[in-house]
Length: 222
Image 1: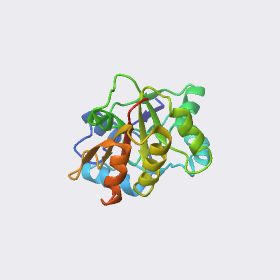
Image 2: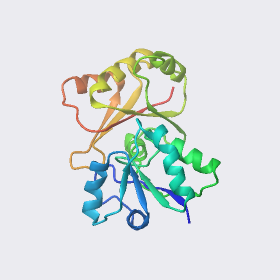
Image 3: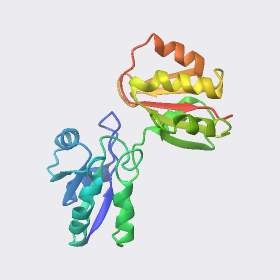
Image 4: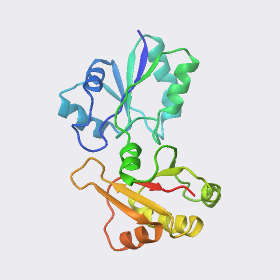
């Protein structure tokens, strides 16, 4: 019976995968992978030989029709991203939406998502929060930040190492240098780091410390 499975994969530590995810990874007919080389490392670690097809940001529109044909023909398909839960700042939304439109069953397994441990580790209020993902690089960046200046909920952003300093500086300028925040990187890995303080303090810290790995930035609400 045709079905699309959304399968979260470890964000770092390979032990952070559920028994159910392993079962589904081995049972689906086809696995859609954001980067087949990276997913192959995980499958080899688990001893799984499921056939993979590349499905990423730059081909998801073109590949959608072919994937839907396979589902309509009765295939079970799994979707994975490089790490974490697909469709959270990664490809997946278009495929899920089309499956729902064509009445193909979709099931998202629970599992790793980077912003949850980062939010909890931050020590900032987490009873109410908003996830903002990646900020625009150019067009609309200042407008987005200005619109969030008065946001009272804790905010969660994803950021890359080479853009973090700029983002911290922009946030300090618009939100105020004393706004509290937390930077989490290399979550679940050996060198996991959670640095907390004001935006100004974080900016000063990372101006003199090497930045590597995936980054999750948590900022206090107004």
